[in-house]
Length: 216
Image (cartoon, rainbow, N blue to C red; front, side, top):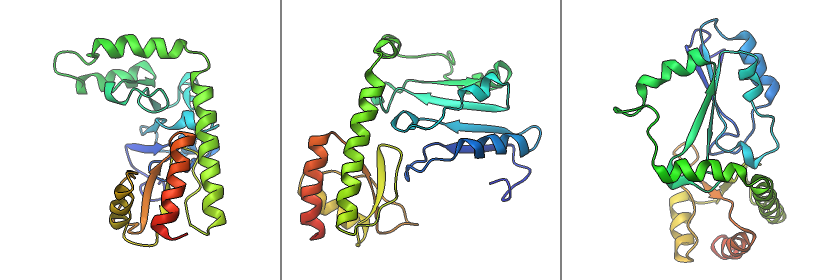
């Protein structure tokens, strides 16, 4: 990224990445902070990081680097419809973001989100238990794919890209016939479909129907 534009004002990293689920090593982020242009900002989106064992970037904020970290309740906390999240950065950087909030108040939030967010943080074992369940279901599915020579991108998140050996839209339609919805695809990867990791029961059902649709 730095080679592509050594004069950019902002460098954005989603970690783990969406849709691949690949992690950017923490040391690479530290390297970018040390070598970026003096006035540039590094923006780290950690929306999926609770599904991995990756090192958080919040300590880099405490060290007063030019970094902003985004976190959300919409993924591992299961609060997608509430659109609740938070920004972590030096006060001078965060203050620059405030004019881009809601017209009436940059801190406007629905009251159910205001109540549910703090309560979810008080559930001490919630993240660890969900991360463990996600990892087990994901790795069991990856083992299934390897046994059947189905290519996939190894993920540290709650999703992965599978090579479904046909146009991804056709694959999604075939899976929908089995009442298994799968994610979207991208033109750059015409035969790869994004699959989200569900519960152990859901992934067992997914593997059965995947075998049927792909003739595994």
